[in-house]
Image 1 (cartoon, rainbow over the protein chains, first blue to last red):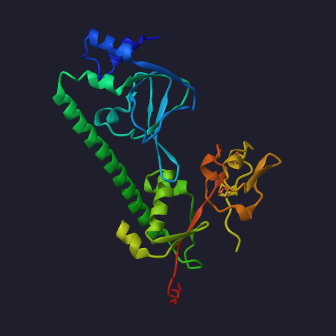
Image 2: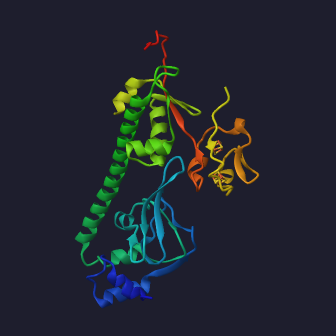
Length: 220
Length: 77
Ligand code: SF4
Ligand code: SF4
C-alpha cells in the first residue's frame, strides 16, 4: 500500500511540490475509515477540507427537493474531491458517502490553503475561479433541467390525445419517457412536477391530463 | 373509479420484498412470496416501488390525455 506521502505526490494538485511541502501535508493530513454506506459529509455543511481516497470508492451526490439522489461522480483511489469549497469558502456543494469500505485522507482547508501563503494572488485567483465554477455548475444544472422540461413538454404535446378518441391513449412509464427525451427517471419526475406547478398538466393518479397545451408550447 | 395501482409481473417478481419496504402506505405486501397490492385504496400511485424493484417487475405507466375543458364537438373520423 502506498504511504500517504507517495499517494499525495501523485495528485495533480501536488505533483510539483517538493519533499518538504509533501511532508508538511502528510503530517497534517487526517485519515478516516468509512463503512459501506456511511456518509462522509452532507451538501450544505461547512467544508472541512480536501478529500483524497486512499482505498475504496466514494459516491458524490446531490439530493433533489423530492429527496432523490443524483450521483455526480464515483471517486476512486487517488481521486480528490470537494475542492470548490476549499477555495471559495462556501458550503459543500454535494454530499459524499462510501460505496464500499473506504479509507480517506482529509487535508484540512487551512493546510491546503497554507501551501499558497507565499502567493496571496494565487489565493484570490483560486477563490474567484471556485466561485465561478460553483456558479457555472448551478447554471448547468438549471439549464439541463430546463431542457428536460422543454423536451418533456414537447413529448406530452405530441402524444396527448383525447380519451375515447380515434387514437389510443399512450401509456408510458417514467423510464420510458426518460428514454424518449434522453434523460433519467429522476429528472422526469421533477420535470413533471415542475410542469404541473406551472399549470400545464394535472396528474391524477395514473393520468397525466394536459389541461393547457399553450403553456406546454411556451415551455418548449 | 378506483385509483390506478402498479402492475406487478409475478413471473419476474423474486419476492425480495424491497417494494414492500419502500411503499410509504404499506399498500403492497408479500403473498406467497410474491408482491401483491393488498390495499389498493391506500396506493396513491407515487410510483416509488417501480424503480426499487431489482428485476424490474413493477411498472407504473401514465396515460397521457388531452383534457377537453370546453365541451366542443368531438372530431369524428
Ligand atoms: S405506487 Fe406508491 S403507494 Fe402504490 S404500491 Fe407503489 S409505493 Fe405503494
Ligand atoms: S421489489 Fe420486485 S421482485 Fe422484490 S418483491 Fe417487489 S415486485 Fe417482487
